[in-house]
Length: 403
Image (tube, rainbow, N blue to C red; front, top):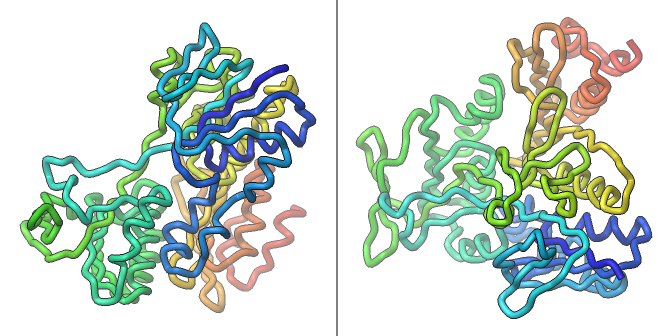
């Protein structure tokens, strides 16, 4: 009987094993996760879960009974120490598993502050997994003082949660503006105004010089401009890196992640990869997408291809972020844009449409699901949108889909 092993029990891993059974695979499946918890949703961790608005059992992607009912062996709290691609084995602390096909859904790891600048002090947190948020939850209380390092979406979401809980929040971003790497100035301006309106002290173009502490716990932050602030804890949101150590040690090709072909196969024909850890062909480039939709879709395609489907993965990039009462929805990739069209509607709805010349490439839609839906469909079809219609808040966008 064939044995398929999946390393990484997150969104991609859970989706992959479920898809194998859905496609009728009757062989042995083993899902291995380094965390003690069943596969769970990560996006709510830094929002609803940290706010106390979501219980742990609602985080789980599937109940424990799903894995038992589908004859999927789940090994939790276990680290894979090695992959022997020639022997087709994976080594855990106390056993060696043989596989016929292997899938790597190892995800990504948060970047941390160096110990040399105080990153190893107590009270310095990252926001990546359940243990991180559970460790942080007791200190996220009204009146506490927090410094958030990094003005990307993770940092801004953390700032929103802390501000809503009544904390004193300072956010520093080394770049000239928040969201500089991922969004246009218009989107940065929108979220700067939003956070400032909720009392967040945003400091752009200012880096962190060092953290100082007392008895091993952070108490003070010295910033690059010479100023300092007293803090009770620090949240670090300076990005993530793909978890590729196992793949690299196994001799697999890397390229900004584990390099896979359009079907999800790595440089070893018996090993596949999907999710945050995998880079794949996209149009005329190679990209790696850090998103839940990509983790699900890519993993499901990989599962079907492990069974011989020969299906190409066609990514449809979309993302979201929740901050205060604003729902941001993003469709497409804004790389290579050279102009942005703004659409400001009634009731606070706002969207920014990215163009490369006259070609629509992406949209950022804030509380504007209609604009998001129309733009997403156009982008996925490779079509564009008349800029004059987009810019007119009174114009109906739906006819753009029929043009």
